[in-house]
Amino acid sequence: MPAGELAVNTLLLPKHDPDIMVALGPQSRRFIKLGHLYQLIEEQGQGQEGPLLINGYANIAYILDENGVAWAVHADWDPHYGGWYVSVYSVARLCEWPAGSLVLSQVSSGN
Image (tube, rainbow, N blue to C red):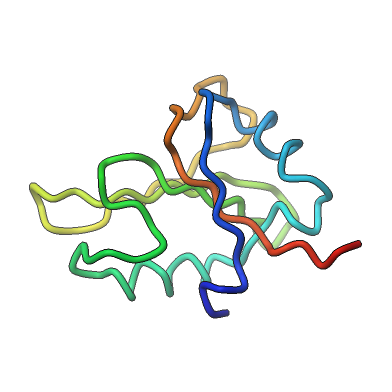
Protein backbone atom coordinates (compact mmCIF):
# COMPACT_ATOMS: atom_id res chain seq x y z
CA MET A 1 0.00 0.00 0.00
CA PRO A 2 1.53 3.34 -0.96
CA ALA A 3 1.85 5.87 1.86
CA GLY A 4 -0.66 8.08 0.03
CA GLU A 5 -3.39 5.52 0.83
CA LEU A 6 -2.87 6.00 4.55
CA ALA A 7 -4.13 8.93 6.57
CA VAL A 8 -1.57 10.60 8.81
CA ASN A 9 -3.04 12.09 11.99
CA THR A 10 -1.21 14.08 14.66
CA LEU A 11 -2.32 14.01 18.29
CA LEU A 12 -2.99 17.54 19.49
CA LEU A 13 -3.48 16.39 23.09
CA PRO A 14 -2.20 13.37 25.03
CA LYS A 15 -4.61 10.44 24.54
CA HIS A 16 -5.10 6.77 25.42
CA ASP A 17 -5.51 4.17 22.67
CA PRO A 18 -9.29 3.66 23.13
CA ASP A 19 -9.87 7.42 22.81
CA ILE A 20 -7.67 7.64 19.71
CA MET A 21 -9.42 4.71 18.08
CA VAL A 22 -12.86 6.26 18.63
CA ALA A 23 -11.62 9.58 17.21
CA LEU A 24 -10.39 7.81 14.05
CA GLY A 25 -13.99 6.97 13.21
CA PRO A 26 -15.48 3.72 11.96
CA GLN A 27 -13.60 0.49 12.53
CA SER A 28 -12.78 0.28 8.81
CA ARG A 29 -10.53 3.35 9.21
CA ARG A 30 -8.83 2.39 12.48
CA PHE A 31 -6.64 -0.50 11.40
CA ILE A 32 -3.84 -0.89 8.90
CA LYS A 33 -1.85 -3.97 7.96
CA LEU A 34 1.44 -4.59 9.76
CA GLY A 35 3.06 -4.91 6.34
CA HIS A 36 2.07 -1.33 5.51
CA LEU A 37 3.84 0.00 8.59
CA TYR A 38 6.86 -2.20 7.82
CA GLN A 39 6.98 -0.78 4.28
CA LEU A 40 7.06 2.78 5.64
CA ILE A 41 9.81 1.88 8.10
CA GLU A 42 11.84 0.27 5.30
CA GLU A 43 11.43 3.36 3.10
CA GLN A 44 12.87 5.46 5.95
CA GLY A 45 15.33 2.78 7.03
CA GLN A 46 18.22 5.21 7.55
CA GLY A 47 16.16 7.81 9.41
CA GLN A 48 15.55 9.92 6.33
CA GLU A 49 12.55 12.25 6.01
CA GLY A 50 9.23 10.74 4.99
CA PRO A 51 5.71 10.24 6.31
CA LEU A 52 6.91 8.80 9.64
CA LEU A 53 8.25 11.02 12.40
CA ILE A 54 11.99 10.77 13.06
CA ASN A 55 12.05 13.35 15.87
CA GLY A 56 11.60 10.94 18.78
CA TYR A 57 7.81 11.16 18.86
CA ALA A 58 5.77 7.99 18.44
CA ASN A 59 4.43 6.67 15.15
CA ILE A 60 1.37 4.60 16.08
CA ALA A 61 -0.58 2.10 13.98
CA TYR A 62 -3.48 -0.05 15.08
CA ILE A 63 -3.21 -3.62 13.82
CA LEU A 64 -5.59 -6.58 14.07
CA ASP A 65 -3.88 -9.93 14.66
CA GLU A 66 -5.00 -13.22 13.09
CA ASN A 67 -7.56 -13.65 15.89
CA GLY A 68 -9.06 -10.18 15.41
CA VAL A 69 -7.41 -8.76 18.55
CA ALA A 70 -6.42 -5.09 18.28
CA TRP A 71 -2.87 -3.97 19.10
CA ALA A 72 -1.08 -0.63 19.09
CA VAL A 73 2.22 -0.88 17.23
CA HIS A 74 4.64 1.89 18.11
CA ALA A 75 7.67 2.76 16.00
CA ASP A 76 10.19 5.50 16.62
CA TRP A 77 13.54 6.38 15.13
CA ASP A 78 16.47 6.27 17.55
CA PRO A 79 19.28 8.46 16.19
CA HIS A 80 21.70 7.24 18.89
CA TYR A 81 21.50 3.65 17.63
CA GLY A 82 20.70 4.51 14.02
CA GLY A 83 17.63 2.33 13.81
CA TRP A 84 13.94 1.94 14.39
CA TYR A 85 12.54 0.80 17.74
CA VAL A 86 9.26 -1.07 17.30
CA SER A 87 7.06 -2.33 20.13
CA VAL A 88 3.54 -3.67 20.52
CA TYR A 89 1.06 -2.82 23.26
CA SER A 90 -2.44 -3.87 24.21
CA VAL A 91 -4.95 -1.16 23.34
CA ALA A 92 -6.43 -1.68 26.81
CA ARG A 93 -3.33 -0.34 28.59
CA LEU A 94 -3.64 2.80 30.69
CA CYS A 95 -0.62 4.69 29.38
CA GLU A 96 -1.20 7.64 27.11
CA TRP A 97 0.55 8.77 23.93
CA PRO A 98 1.96 12.31 24.06
CA ALA A 99 0.72 15.21 21.97
CA GLY A 100 2.72 15.39 18.75
CA SER A 101 2.60 11.63 18.16
CA LEU A 102 1.57 10.45 14.71
CA VAL A 103 -1.28 7.98 14.16
CA LEU A 104 -1.67 6.08 10.89
CA SER A 105 -5.10 4.99 9.67
CA GLN A 106 -6.93 4.06 6.48
CA VAL A 107 -7.98 6.89 4.20
CA SER A 108 -11.71 7.47 4.52
CA SER A 109 -13.67 5.91 1.69
CA GLY A 110 -16.37 8.53 2.13
CA ASN A 111 -18.80 6.09 3.74
